[in-house]
Length: 119
Image (tube, rainbow, N blue to C red; front, side, top):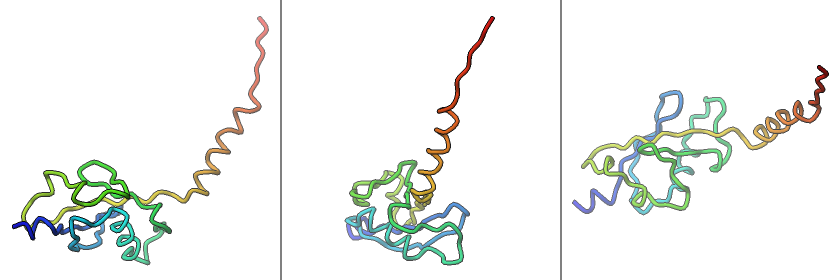
């Protein structure tokens, strides 16, 4: 039974409802390694795919998993189903260059606002 608990069967659900996997991972696998797996197996025909591991967020049991943690540390009681497949959700963040331009454009209207009221 300990052998089954050392291996987790995981599938990754993308935002459009399609899946990557399932695939078996040891409990000692880091979240960063999971992200690399998702990046390598990302369907090429999908638009707006992640470019780097930093663009990928993995959510399990309602929590965003941190890169430096292992699957064993992130395991929820919901994941301890013998021979069951755990579904983890994958979110792709927009590249940082796009986020930077949004911040600049939101600051521009605030710079030139001035008003006087004479009663």
